[in-house]
Length: 405
Image (cartoon, rainbow, N blue to C red):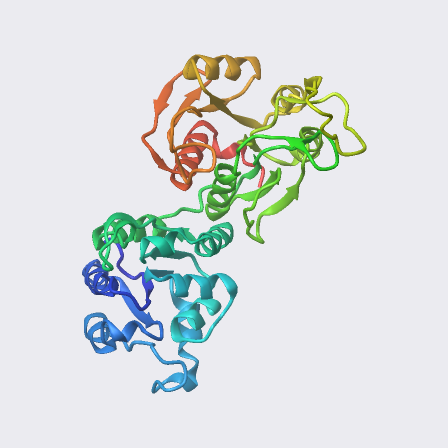
């Protein structure tokens, strides 16, 4: 069986979707996984601990102080031995506790002590899922390397229709299998990633930029880290959190990113330039805020910014270089021209004019093109999945002997 000898902690929080955790537990045990169930304070209002105990064959941790083995610090013991923590369903309250280090029930206690990979499947009212505080908590946890399985769109327990329904147990099972099959296949490589937009100032309070969120670059950095690579991330201004085990440099202007790439390039094997570097900057930065003068127009003279990829073509000493091409027309042809003009080894093209993908989105639809102009178009996927596909392609094109450790 695929999960034989794997130890999994199944975290269940208090929501109507807790019944799906019962089915997930059944599927996990059918795959011969050893499962320990941990419940939040209110989860037993929906499914009893006895149900989970009977199906798992293991005691259920659901009370911090009153359980029979609480004196043995069972949450710490389980956390030290498990291969994966899956929280399904994860309510807004549970996500908030985990994101902010609160530990006042069995599940949040376990999470605070757990050091392995974490997979979270939210389930809640659509209004709660759209709440800025909930979104911020999710982004915080993603920035720390926690994986999320986005909820489905459909009819919810409250009667509304929208995103927030826990995905099917079969989908959760496949996500668990994918997470546990991650290989340490990039352990020989040092990977440099750029992410985010650049800000080119006009005056002390204004700047020219673009809508890049940095999500693609952060996804690549964290995926590479999870696969064993030593990762350095250079990012323009974003609201994303970066994991502590990723070496991180922040910058603002294209010239600053150019300097950082120049400095870090010699110590990497692979450079992945996902950053949306601005093409132009004001020729002159005003020392004082530019003020509106009646109905007069403001004329700005813009000059080209540093072409970082073109510079890399001169600086590189054997590094494998990947560029990204965000285009609005002639997508493939423009990407191929960039591939050759910038002397890249590989390029990822995406259509920024397509609604609902690309900038700011958690998903994207991209096309891979290699030096031989072989084209592979991926379907619409979460950016984290695109990151793993990209790393797979890079690995297939580089001999393991090229890794410098």
